[in-house]
Length: 234
Ligand SMILES: [Zn+2]
Image (tube, rainbow, N blue to C red):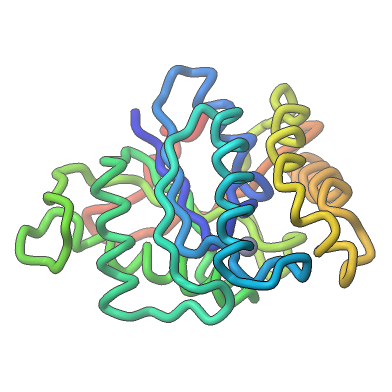
């Protein structure tokens, strides 16, 4: 299968669903990552958005190597992503590029605006992926992928309906997240817990809910023609 993980920022994939991607990788599936922004305000150590984007894209590519994933950067500005014909076109292109059987995406109810808008666009363009007259640059695809939303920052406002046991890949997930080095100094300025602590606590809590040591939780998107197939989760 082809698995596409769509996120708003470099590190979203590693925080929220890299364990599941590592399980898919173990099973021999092809992994694709698309990011709507390159997190280009996510640091105070650089003077321009371009520099930050460059650093964060490089970190994302290193993490993607560990996940065995190809990456597509859509490069909209961080914080303030909008649902526009332009962003929709880019997301449709990304989905068609990956030709996915399963899509993992941000949750539209996520309190982070970029996360919510990314999740909303993915959900709302899914009916557009087979149509040849839809404004896009990639050709239509015939698949009807299952769309699952991954969690929100520290799980706020997100009640999973299905869990993936990531216990045996949790250390690799931590390694992947640790590659987003620019986020350490940044996050420590305004958060009481470091990025890896957050991962440890959140994934252990989801594991507690599900009866595993560590887990990632998901909710499914449902629309006629694109109903979720839970058996496709690893
Ligand atoms: Zn994010």
